[in-house]
Image 1 (cartoon, rainbow, N blue to C red):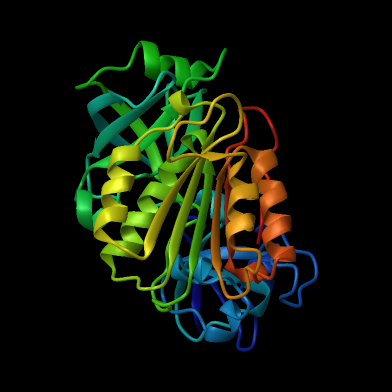
Image 2 (image 1 turned 60 degrees about the vertical axis):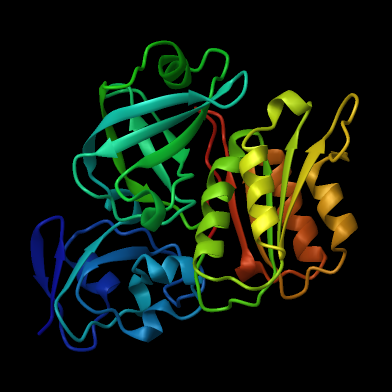
Length: 330
């Protein structure tokens, strides 16, 4: 009989029994609801062993790539080591390589973990100030381009304990702790001609910058459009690097958007969503990445869906303020 290992304890799984039934029969609390594979509330992550294909049917490709499966649909045929999504990561020591100001309130923090981190550009890590205070930041780095260096973009939030610590007290050479990568907002190869739309505001550029360079470096051929929005030109950053990428990749277009005040030449008036839908009113067949302010992300998710984008092709990473409930999407 297959053996299911959860938090270091092994459980024998009877023939025909699902992972969910096996664990709950032993008193393990696994979130679940419909038990038919529809609601996906019983998602778990395989840390070792094979997962039957049926247990991942209907999941986004980003979830499948990370080993997620539906526990209620998974009848294992071999030993399996599993974890709940929020228990998959472990703390990891890292050192600060550099801190670079990107604009008046955002800095790029580069970190070198004590061991190579298995991640995908656009995912996020948790940065710890101490045992009680931590914050999640998206990764702008690309594993095969930056090797062992992680890059996050940290915006200073008024009263933000972690962001203020980063801006005012953290220095190159300091030791910190991070948690392993997570998140479903990243590029998955396999459809190189599919159009890509990337929308971001503020430090929401961080994951998009990683996703963009990852896609281009893997030979993505379809149109790629990145819209980065700010209230004023001072809020934009990495413009030179994005313009250089656009110059060397004709199928990539960078569109900086200004929502208030005078608009310099080469920039668009209005918010990123308005600009993107004005350029692409029909989003059928597009893959979409939305990052930044939660209100923008929520509205953009709805509008691009109404414009024809399939829900499975819409990947979102709302930057929710500390203390606010974090929206979870299947």
